[in-house]
Image (tube, rainbow, N blue to C red):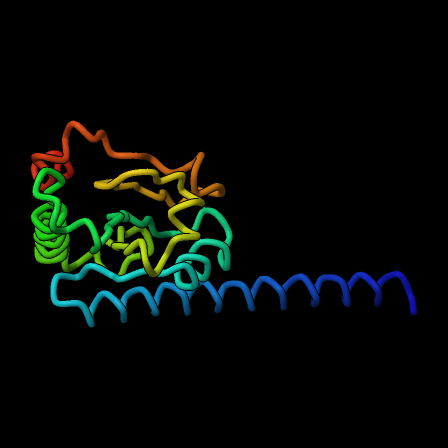
Length: 167
């Protein structure tokens, strides 16, 4: 095989890999849009497998960010945590965002509101370093490491969740 033929084979291989990864990213984005549309409030329920699929299956920057509310249903009866109320506020924020940003919801630079429940996602809680709830993290499109590259919302702001997150 001549050097020129070898070069064409390598270029063809690289283009094929790039095209496959582009389709994969498009599929992931379409899946997120579909999951969001199936949720009444627009909040996507993530679990360990879905998070892994949306975070590690695509390269950074992904073209979308994730805002994740970490929940523990077994602690909903602890009134001092107000998890149920905070989760409702998070849903209102997601719904408001969707209502006020309809034209940009299918753009590749949008944010998806998600929640994770401890009993379904213990591995993800560990990956993020979540030790207590309420806990909210923004996973920017450029995040490589879930723990180091995500941004934790200040716990002092959790009493005014929708107000503080909308700022």
